[in-house]
Image 1 (cartoon, one colour):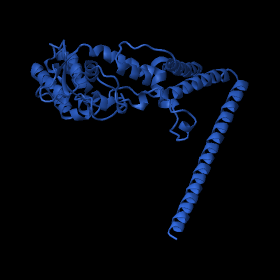
Image 2 (cartoon, one colour):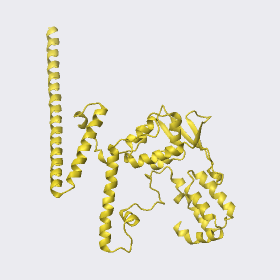
Image 3 (cartoon, helix red, strand yellow):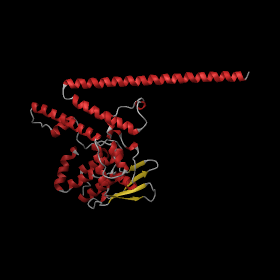
Image 4 (tube, one colour):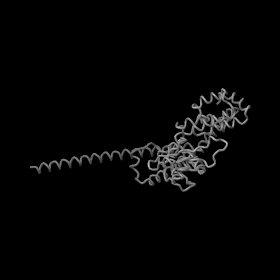
Length: 345
């Protein structure tokens, strides 16, 4: 859009309502068919068939219109978003190009502190108690799994999903047609029924808007179907780890981890909660001074060493047990062979 900025300004002066109409068309459609219908209606309304800038935008539509990129996973980042680099973060809320160097250094420290406070708030929220808005099992599941920020997005979409109406498709009982009860009268192209596949037996939940494929988070339409079905649990394949509370804190899988705990999932979660709480206390105390930092660091390293030694000892014991079992089995086979040979005379 930036390279077509000047010719578009001329069109905006000729047609005062064009900018709002064009912005809605570029940002609102969820499907390519919606965008194409909206574009054709706009061209007809303002008679822009022979305008070069509109011809060029239409020719390049598949390169920059998000409706054509729904099946490409972007983790909620789009080509139209500003960069989330540290440079942009600083400029957005801490410094300007007119600030002196000493002010810049001070504001960088403030920025870092703000980031740490946000991370601490996330950590505290993960160990605190939250309440679901509804009694649906799937909401309790995502509240337990998702981070505070991602769960807030889910809950907002769940709230807006109540404005959708659902009917079962006649061709397939697992297909549902979802539409907004207050369809737009201003934009005729936005009146669309979204087809949602919900197969509880196979655990498949897909919407033709492709928002989950694009961002990894469910759209209003699928959430509305969840509520319609009163779903107890969302299949784990749809809960991406990048959005969960364990995305950073959970270490790589270690097959020996589960040998030092019980098979009771509640017990494992209880131990993790206790250890996490104690670790946070040590971290907070250790950050207050250099001496306390060294004490905390030494304690963590000593604990890691002792845990590694415990793993090694467990593995050695298992190897020794397997060797003893193998020797015992060989001895039993030898005795059986001798007994059988003796019986044959």
